[in-house]
Image (tube, rainbow, N blue to C red; front, side):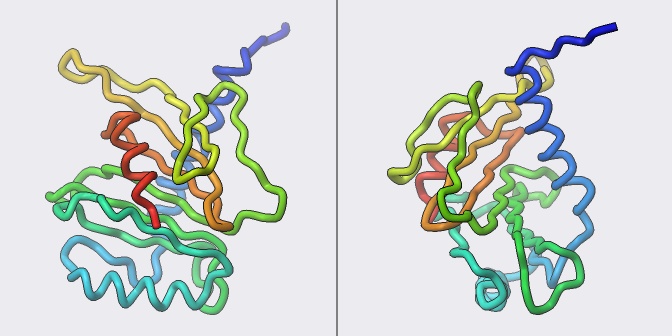
Length: 177
């Protein structure tokens, strides 16, 4: 028996799987995770410490809602001297729902991002791709699940959300400095 999976479906399936693995499998991996109960100064202090342990530039969205809490996760687990990847989770004002997740790691020379079935978008002068993975319908309203991928200033960035529209995600991506 042969199974044929079209490229678009396969791309969406792989991106959704990566998002789920990153969000679920590593959900308890933290180094002094910063939650909404901690102050902005604590988050800034934690980010200063993390910046010393990464070999890429950490970019932050300037226009993420001030009502959102920030949780910082680092990978690999238990490493204290060299961090390979970080994930920033912006949670709603009740600290219950993930509004947006932003993964960052080092982009290697000549690395480019290309999703053959994604939509090309420009993010801070960099070519990126948006891919909508579908999503559930809740109260007769479709809840989008999507992601953006791009390389900026030597950093590979994955931005995912199941709460925000494509335009809202692109606006946040364009504010990352």
